[in-house]
Image (cartoon, rainbow, N blue to C red; front, top):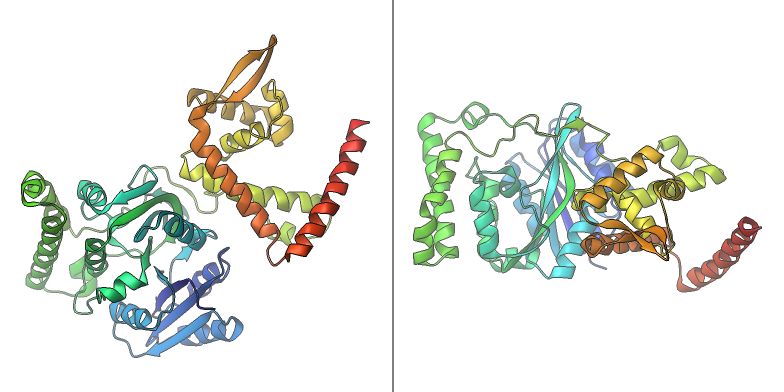
Length: 436
């Protein structure tokens, strides 16, 4: 069976972080992919590390080549790729466990030509959540271009690795990276690709950990001032031409000065994120669903409950990030949506296993957002979910499906049927004891 996704990683002297990068790919929840590692003439042990991964996992393919640069490496991988979609990754970065799954789900459900997602910016031991489009959903090419115009030279739009591309469109239009360009080459590829898109899906969940620090063009590339200016003028002209094609002549005249903002931003080097963004947290604290390795491998009834809780929290956390909520808020909605009557925060805390303080805080936030309220039914108070919570409940339904899908992975239909029947007996036994 051909892979649905081809994940492309150029590799050059990356032995210190290649294991982390490749491990994040091979541990993806979505498994129908091929990983193409392009060893770009590495002088360290990177090539051998790539080969060792290929020997252990048949989804990994390795291309060894002379050192010709990252653009040429990506082009070689595109030519070898077999997937319906292309996903790019830099060798010193890594993916969240659900990255490819969210990319594919967004593309397949919407029928879009490109998915663009949020990411984490890592600086030392700190990281920040980075995004630009505030509402998740499908956008036309012109709507996307208008949003891109508001933040010219933004990393979010300029890089490859927070996007999912259709290989068919790339091949149909003969799109490739330009090895002769050493500045904004990713952005130019994106612009050329978007020119041929009908729709783009904006995914708010962060799917990528970006750690590479880039210096200025002149210092890092050794380019002369004249060559740098000429290169920037060429990129700006490409950017300007993109908007001339996306908009008609009259509409372009209205936005022409906004388009020129890109040149002003790019003149300062552009496409460079600050080391620390607002809202930074300690690396490793961005996700509450991380599980203790010892507990994951251990045996026992208590650890079984722990693992189930952490797995459920993982999917609820994605819902929380997408909807700009806390995990506690999402868990309160999850339990309130189970169909039982809950009269106060003490009962909610009992259900969720959270502290009364955390539960009370989550309830206050949900009430402020008008997602839940307390109402009287036959002179008794209870919490009810309001219509404003509908989008979150929809995401929670998907989270529950993801939870079940992972639990029953590689089960046959007969095994599922037998397990369900036995589980009903188990649940019945527990209910009978607790009723006594």
